[in-house]
Length: 442
Image (cartoon, rainbow, N blue to C red; front, side, top):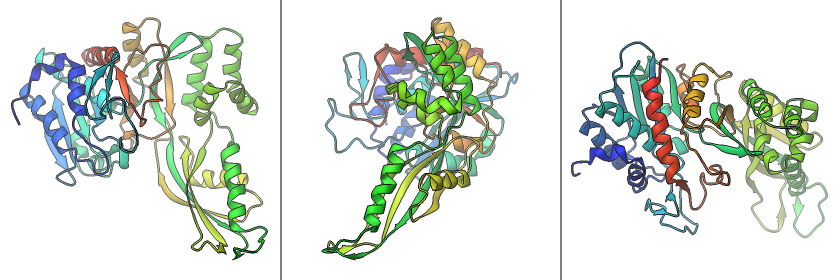
């Protein structure tokens, strides 16, 4: 590898382009070359990154910048693997990093090489400009987030937690970008996330010959199950981060929308209000319920035999503080009267409560760059590597700052075709993160 251009920290957009050009589609990942490139940049500015891995071609990088010892260490982390871009037509090559129409195009532009570029740019700038932070800053580039983190964050927590033992707070995905609601600009900062709770359903019914009429057969029962889980919500639950989120939103809105948002926090009215909110209701619903989505159905072996058993996999997501027993009870009640056996196939526990200690500071950093912005806490409907870090007491905040135009939604770009991020948003984020590192006091 030729000597890296270390001045690229001044050009976070170009840095992002370079990261996108490494095809780190997971599976298989192949994060090695991308991690090696990041390591070369850090060595070029006089830092000493450490490479650790469960398997040689799935490496992770840890790099520590010494601070003044006046605050706990702060961690910046992001994953360099991406989901597949295959099977769909893109306007630009997904691994080109093209610049067009004011965007950086490519797989990972948002999730999450854009965030890695912001963090790396700010981290290198601190080093080059000789700025000593209040506490150590630990930059971590991870493999395998898109496939449960077995080779990435999970491996790091289980085998190299000494390198993170003094970290109290961490900045990662997914939040810090602006979203528009009723003419106001809000910045959701992720402070919590849902938990994975995959369910396996065994649906039973009458079997028989394919040429006969078989009332109550398993396929018929499958249809009833799919209808219920696709059209009915599980019970409403108001968790502390979501209560705080909607309270802050309502305080910034005018009547009658202000009242509508407040009514979301009354469980007996929540679902009615969600229905009235239309598209926004679809966005908010997962934050207020445990949820399931049917993903895999299997049944039958011959076209002329009506099966007596059909299996159905449900991708379940639990709110913080809830358990698999809660999910089984709620889904069981939803499917009452049907012959269905419910078992838990996979559960990944997350932290029951969020530590909001760094939220006010991060809010100040955002409003310093966008005085009209309104930071709000945010519960992510999906999961990130934050759940692994929580096992060793690290509170993560989704904080990859982006100031977006009103009609731009980051949510629609993640994992989708033509993933892209505004050039100005990447530059904005790098500046905010740099200021955050400078002013961090623990």
